[in-house]
Length: 70
Image (cartoon, rainbow, N blue to C red; front, side, top):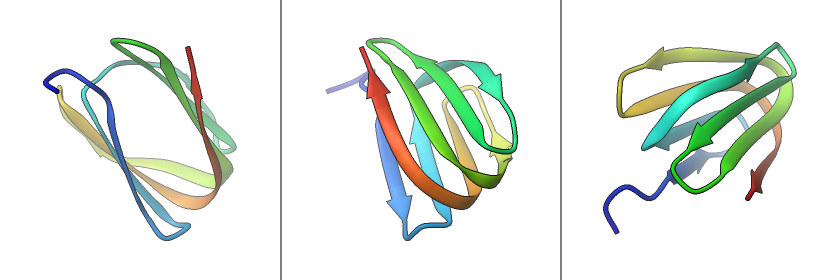
């Protein structure tokens, strides 16, 4: 399904998010993103956006939870 958000978690320290639209909130404990159909929140500690492009981003740190909020 083209355009759907794709979230790939690698263990508890790395998340790759594809097809996001924008960054709504960015702190050390929470990164909240807008996607086409929902918001995605990554919560944890020492969170860092390691890189981002128009299509994807990589978040690293100690990830405690990932929440999808319609």
